[in-house]
Image (cartoon, rainbow, N blue to C red):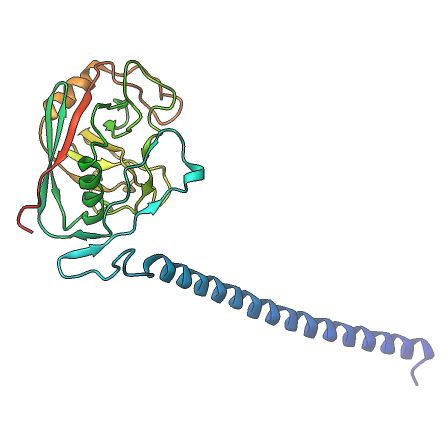
Length: 279
């Protein structure tokens, strides 16, 4: 016959088991609820993203034509809010959203040292080429200086800041651009090195969709991460770029992005884009 103490222990054990079972059931229901809420949150984000995308790309046909026709690509140029623009931003309007994705163009950079030319394939960079064509037509690059030279680790000459003008250098050099950004194109993810000597590529802030007007000419094979749009290939004037590189830099950006202002000044008198050939 069991004692009173043993019966009490058995009853206590049974109560504990019931409590544990109830807790497990509640925890399971709570996890199920959280999973449902989480799934709903994801759905809301997906729906919101879809609505945002539809809003961004859709709308009144009078404002922009979103249907990419034969031989054209639909491009999105994201305008920088006016209240967030610095003095280094130069507003020359937005390019057309429809851009040709066939044919080639020649970029001519007329500098104080002589011309530098590049070939651009529209099939690879329709939106970036369209942006450059628009900016060039507005005189955006005219009378600006190539503000950054890197000679160690990577070998690039960077240009395209509309605010890098006049005599001397400013702390803000390298922060200027147009009043919009666009997505990256033609990323060399399958190339080794990603940026060989002779390519011209677009600079960005490191964030996706932050391509603007600044570009860099690669005068020596460079192991950069493949995050920068390859705009085209230099076809003439590389000797001029190498002259600038040979003169070195002043180390102004050594503690930040690397390099500095070129000691041998190179000024873009005018940058022009030819008509599309073979389109």
